[in-house]
Image (cartoon, rainbow, N blue to C red; front, side):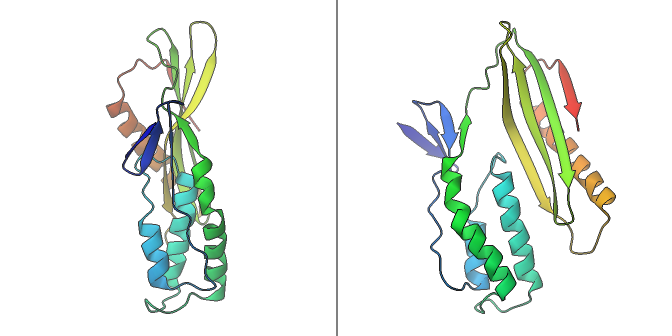
Length: 188
């Protein structure tokens, strides 16, 4: 049995969240309108699809930079990148996120925050590490946020700083929403 909320489904038997996306129909060429319409349907409120969403955001930025009309075909290089995205998009259906992170009041809880940047994009991600009283360690992705780098060229150190700011804002949001005693917070 499963239930669906905000494009995320929950499998009660496995107690995990999953996505059930409809594969994008491949075509020989796509228009700006089709690509942006498809990308607008990607909905990831928790940030579990960050690596997928950031690729779509980068393609969307390129579509706008191509400066074509709404019903014109994409230029070859952009079309090639979009075709790669379309071909692998159905793999999102293989992602499973456990609902329970193995937290108990006796657990030692750590948050691990990472940020990174490239010339194309930057991101922040938060993992939770739970060490139970019997010594078992469980690590789970809590959330992720990505942004495409601005069109105007910015240095990598500056983008790294943008990633760190994004991660700190993400941490602030997470800390305001969870009600557990944290033992440590690590930032990288």
